[in-house]
Image (cartoon, rainbow, N blue to C red; front, side):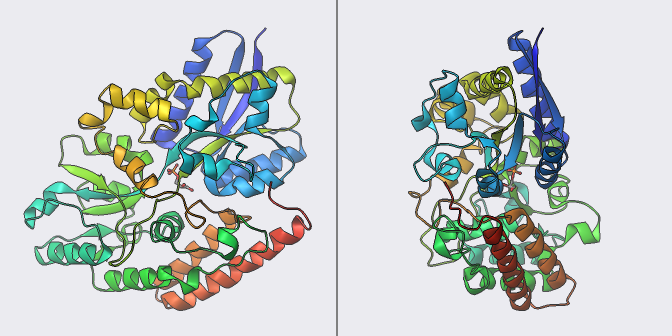
Length: 421
Ligand SMILES: O=P(O)(O)OC[C@H](O)CO
């Protein structure tokens, strides 16, 4: 009889279907194990459901943990660290092959990976090349100043939606801060201690949110969800808005949505003039093995991880999504096959360029702040208050920082005396 184990993931739609496909491929590749993969909705819900399931001992063997949940999972006492899982089951993983930006994010202070990198992304600017042609341009802006200029030119040329906008902590705060080398919190964004404090209301991020508000007021950015019910991605793919900012993960979905409709591309996030661009930070999620399972189930989990790490699996995953290969081995395999040479896959390498743009610094390593999923929610609700005209960006960011610090202090008390591994 096959050994069965569960894997809960936090993706839906096109991406969720492709996670399911990795499970089907694994099940078809061998006859000893049967992985059962269950979508839990989005990343935040997957995490929430997993915590709730622990109480009833109904939790899965593997959970897909959103990147920022790493400290919560590491301190939970309920994780079987990936490096140990693989070692205990005799799998010889070349950990050095993982891109440093990815490995750093999921590693403890001794450089050992606690989760298995899987769906790694970063934020990109999606731009409509045909719309640019209409204003005599053929390159994506590298600075926010130039971006504003492009928006203005598009509007003047009669474009009704130069860009769609929806507040995204991941793009506007987290990735933005990384590429500008600006801190989100003290203590190197939490890596150096649970007593970190939020500073995002005092950095270049505050200027950025003021600029975004001004662009909205000037009709350069349209809040699509409010105006048409469309997501910024759908509005872009429908040719309605000339830009949107989002994960490279959706590159394949956008490819399918746009079809032959128009020419488009992705570019690295702009930076403000005078900024020395830094690496962006890995987004997406990684796979965490949880406590309380049988040794056979753990062996199955390790086999699945080993299966995902194969270059052929990396090729499958990068083809059907936009996620990047997580190892040098996977990347080299794709490069040798000419994967990035032609559309529709050409462009996806820009995510890797962004992630590896500079050596990782203490401020661009990532975020190690407790309960950051809740901090994201606070930031978002404060930004909604800006969009509805109730607060200025600075007031909203000050309030978001205050509430976030309360969340951090609560987390610190929960793990009183404990330190991050
Ligand atoms: O859409 P994804 O999977 O690239 O994830 C984006 C962010 O990292 C979510 O935290």
